[in-house]
Length: 212
Image 1 (cartoon, rainbow, N blue to C red):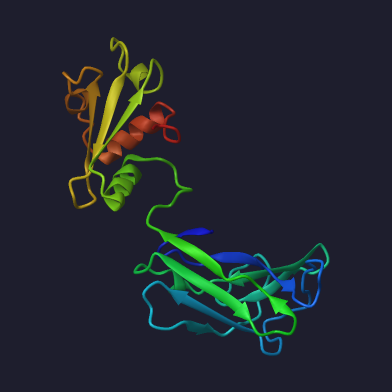
Image 2: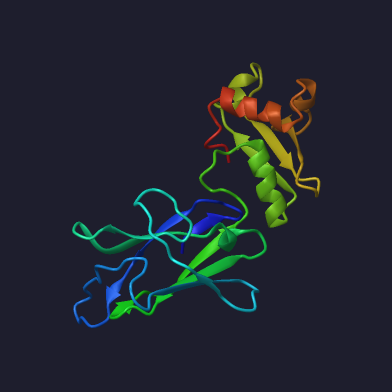
C-alpha cells in the first residue's frame, strides 16, 4: 500500500494493467488517456460518493494532474503512469482509493493509498519528532546515545546522555538534554531548549538521521 503525506502535491504513481482475456497474466498494452470507455474514479474516506477523474495526456516523468501515459510499452508493457489530482490527497481522510476500469480486456486491482501526517522520507529533526509525537498522541520521547554521538559533545560526561523531546499538546513541544541519571539538565545550562538548537546539535554530532 503506497504511503503519501496529506496535502502532498504533484504526486505520481505507476499502475500495472492486466489483460483479462489472457490466461497467462499478460499485461494489456496500448492504452491511452482517451481509450474508449476507459474511466478513472477516486474515493476518499468518509466521502459520500467517488469523484470522476477526467484523464488527460501526459509526458512520462513529468507530473500532470490526471495525466495517464504508458511508461514504456516495449520495455515495461502494461505499466502506466498516473498523476494523482491534488484534491485526492488533502487533509481530512486517512485513505483514498483509486480505480481504473472500462477499457476492453482491462483489469486493474483497486489501489488504496494511505494518507499519513508525517513524511517518512524526511530527516529526523526535533521538530519532526515533536510532530510525530503530537499526531500519534504520545507525550514524551526519550532518545539516548552511548559513548559516541551526543556524549562526545559534552566532555566530562560519562556513560550517556538523554535527550527528551516532549509535546506540550499543541504540536510545538520542547527539548531538554539531561545526564544519564537525570540529575543535571545540560540542555538548559547550554541554552539548548528549542528545536532550532537541538537540530543544530543533531547535525553537529552526525545524528540527524539515526537518533532514536
